[in-house]
Amino acid sequence: MTERTFSIIKPDATKRNLTGKINAVIEDAGLRIVAQRRIKMTEAQAKKFYEVHAERPFYGELVETMTSAPVVVQVLEGDNAMARYREVMGATNPEQAAEGTIRKLFALNVGENSVHGSDSTDNAKLEIAQFFKDEDIVG
Image (cartoon, rainbow, N blue to C red; front, side):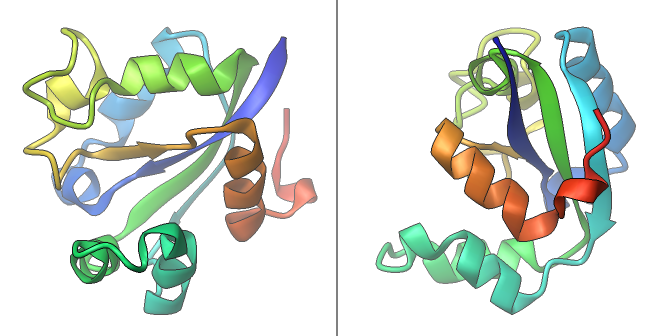
């Protein structure tokens, strides 16, 4: 089943000029990038995006990190795109991530783990809508 999911290449990765390398892993996994934008996330955007974590102790640090440098927001498309991308990302902790996953290859640590991916199809729709209009997505 073809579906779409949302991806962010985080500041730790853009600062190290890894966008192309990360996207190569994504595309090699059979996912297509159907929308992409490099932005400097504002504090308001980051707070809205991560509002589910607002009560957690790491929320402030997360917002600060995500606004510290440009990010690349993207829409990925493919068969079972959400599950496939989560598999390709690897475990949040790069030490526990499988070989060949984005986080095993590029993450610095649990906090600077290079990428974000939607955790459900409902969240994917919400996250995509926060950064893209329908006409921005060209499949």
